[in-house]
Length: 333
Image 1 (cartoon, rainbow, N blue to C red):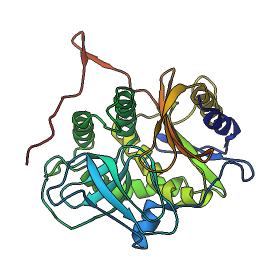
Image 2: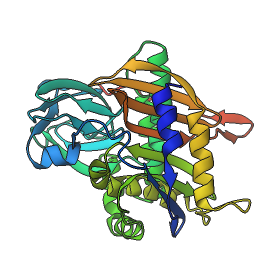
Image 3: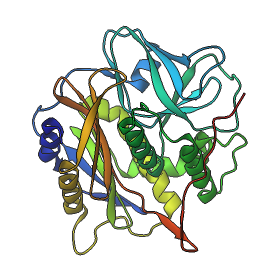
Image 4: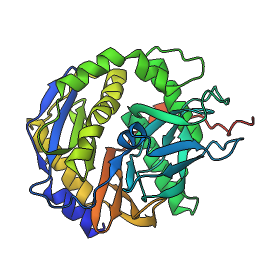
């Protein structure tokens, strides 16, 4: 692994765990001011201050791409899985991107609203959501695979649609346009309760999430002020999946407390191997994998801006055969 990623992970300190319903959260901290790196705005901040605009790449649009114009004097961070809603159809970002100041960038995205391809607005707005943890994990694995084959930051669009459909089915939500945003909207109060149950801690820069007695994911953001903005949507990302899975065990297993499990997962992440690719924006995009773990990291000027690791999803066997997600073609409009 790139040493800066492993070094960063080795410095993370788990805090006091909390549990609510079937989700456990362990806050993560980075001692001192090490690893914070350059200042930047989050997507929510930049859109809220009207410093960036996000549009289709052309009047006709293209499903796997969007255009972002950053007018700010600072870079802008868009997190892997953040959802943008509006324009011709809702999308999520395929990988974490740090947009250069005063720049125009075409970014790789996936559709999360299969049943619409018509304008509802000229530009996109922030949904306030990061897609659910399981879909993020599947998407991360697909992007890593496509990068290794020279196909760029493409996800498996069919798998994303299939996972959104499955999430809607589990949550018993019917969306006329098969929109992931409708699933989040249907559980807005319950998600708010989860966010309230896991308040931001002072100087917190990340979290480890547990469901079913095991760690399912870890997110870290370099600057506490940026993480403060992202914390509620990351909690909701893990909470929605926890609600869909319906597990009754959020916390420790085998006599271990959640903080110990988080530390164990982070050690496994630090041992992951991978390779790097030029990022769509600033820096390098590392794609990483280990024993039952898939992850990525955005590194800029020797600073880990964001890293996320997920427990790999197990294959589901039905009737002696591996059940795979349905394959969809991009719709022809």
